[in-house]
Image (cartoon, rainbow, N blue to C red; front, side):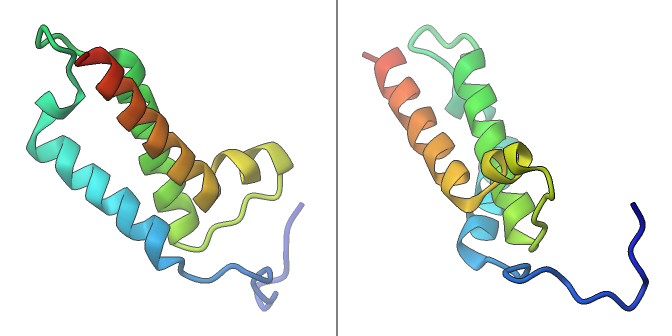
Length: 98
């Protein structure tokens, strides 16, 4: 399905600063200090890493103004999903560190 080059962007497809900031902040934090995503023994916590990457991807996707057409993708890559994934990451790390 192609769109004409002069098509207007979808309603709500503007830069969302909060999710964008969350995505960029996570990207920088994880890159600068990977031990953030380890368990109490210092081993990689793959569930926390996956949740953090979901939060980062959703934040960056929604933050730049991209709104997927597919409803499942739209929900999983929304600003609310980004916040939910971040909260789940924090909860997972709190649980892993006892």
